[in-house]
View 1 (cartoon, rainbow, N blue to C red):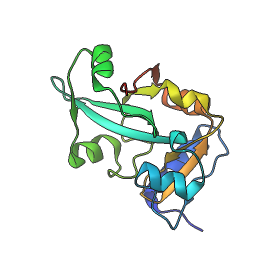
View 2: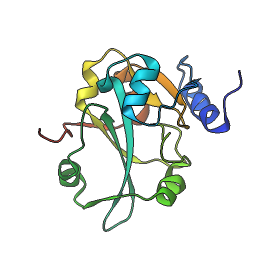
View 3: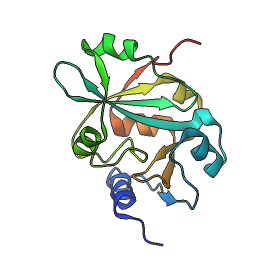
Length: 160
C-alpha cells in the first residue's frame, strides 16, 4: 500500500538515515497520545509528542520531543534557550516543519530545528512517533531517534 505524501516523506527520511524502519498508516487516528497508544498497543509513555514552540524574541521554532505521559515544563526549556517559549500557531508550524499539527514527526522537517528530547523516553526499548499525518506512525529505539534528531536530552516533565 502506498503511503500518503507526508508519510512518504518521513519514510524517505528514515531510509536516507540508513534505518530499515517502516512508516505505517493506520485506520484509527493517532492524533492524540491516547489514540496513538491504543492504535499501536503500547503504553502512553512510549508515544513521542512532537511539540513545536516559537521563541518570544527571535521567533525561531523549537521542537520538544516529549513522552506521552509527561506535560512539558516550558520554563525548563526557556532556561536552556534564554528566551520565552510561546505556543506556535498552525501556520508557523506548517511553515517551519512542512507538516500540519496532529501528525508532526520528529524528523523530515522543512528546515533544521533546535530540538529537546525528554529523558523519560530513554527508559523504553521502543517508542512510537508521528509520521506526518494523524494516521501515520513509526516505531524506533529512543537512542536511534536521539541520533537522528541531534536533540539535547533534558528533564522536561512538569512536576506533579
